[in-house]
Amino acid sequence: MNGEVPRDLLGRVRATRKLPRDERGVVVPGNTVRGMARSNLERWLGPADYPSAHPRERQSGMPGGGKIFNPKPGEPGGVFCVKDLFGEASRKAGEKARASRVFFSDFVLPTPEAEKYVVKILPPGESFELEVARKGATFEGFLLGDGLKPWEIGMLAFALGYRGDKHWGVCLLGRYKRSDPHYGRVTFSIDDPRLESYYKEFVDHCRDKIGRVEEDRE
Image (cartoon, rainbow, N blue to C red):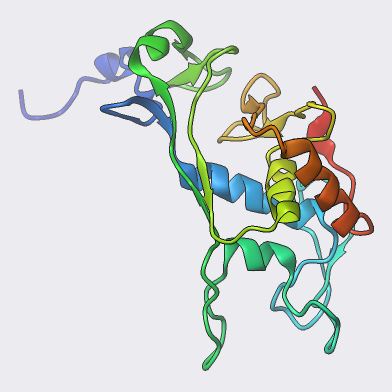
């Protein structure tokens, strides 16, 4: 052998794109969920504080229409509530970075459950196997907040799909979330008896900013 792999062997070998794992089991990184939550709020809560000087259209493929604007100088509030909660790096000389006030742990599917719920499939038109978690798999994690107001906790629940009266809508997560409706559909839950009151405070606080939410299709 000269180190080359025969072409007929290459045709029979399939790479597998595996779900992340560590000693706890299969893991959805906390930053992945955090990024989804922030992205949801920036799309669902009306005008966002982006640095561009002019309005711009939303990116193609993003649910919901409309434009993103800078807040007008002198507007009350000063900082868009999503930036205040999730933080932001400095964008120009002399500007201070804003630290995040919320932490998402990793979400873990313990190994015994992973053995039951994780399967390999071959996506149509692809040459590799994809490892996925079947419907019914339950990942567990936690959130930590720094000085969060009740309405901000309600806003976090909204970002994760809470719609009031103990109903959690579907959120989209992962690589295939927009290309195939069979993948990337998740629902969250938060174990807190005060959640409904927090959510109502959020709705009262942001009522005129809440936009259409397309992920609510189940």
